[in-house]
Amino acid sequence: MTPFFLNLAPVNQSGSTLAKLYLFMGVVFFILGGLGMYRQFTAQEVSLNVYLLPFLQLALAVSYTIVAWRRRKPSGTTYVQVTEEHLELKLASNQAPVTLPWTSISLLRVLPDKLLYRLTSGQTGQIEFDAIPEEYEDTVREAIRQAGKQKGVSL
Image 1 (cartoon, rainbow, N blue to C red):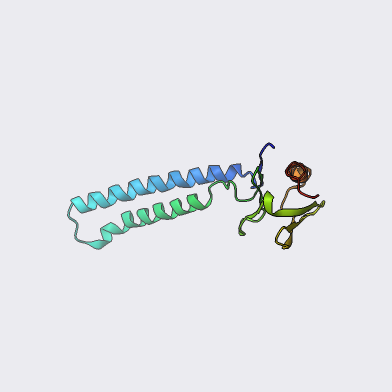
Image 2 (cartoon, helix red, strand yellow; image 1 turned 45 degrees about the vertical axis):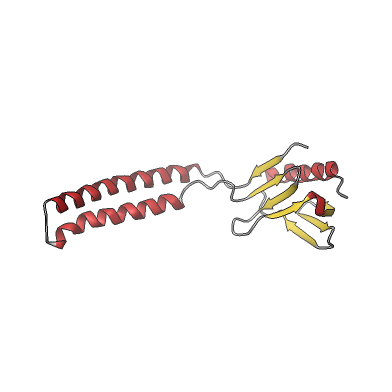
């Protein structure tokens, strides 16, 4: 059986570009603020108001770095993975992935809008396919069906 992995995270090219821009601005403000602090410190200034502008520049550098970190391109936040050992579905980024080992699946039904399963322990469940884009639904369903047939799971 060939492993199957499909990344369902949206491709966000502008997010990656914006993250690089914010990171660049953070580096620039860090350099400017750091140099300003260094110059005032080496000049042995005792007045605190001369440190205000370099301190604000360092604060901007930290905030731009945080924004760049949050705008980085998502990868692998939602996915479908079929391997020799298990079937793993993570269809919502705020939920833990559902991992079903092939040895514990006794019944597997792949319907157009959801996946129904029964484990050997008697536990049943369903997974909605709402988060899967329409162009990938058939591919995901077929990959799960083929893997189930090869693993001898009752379909």
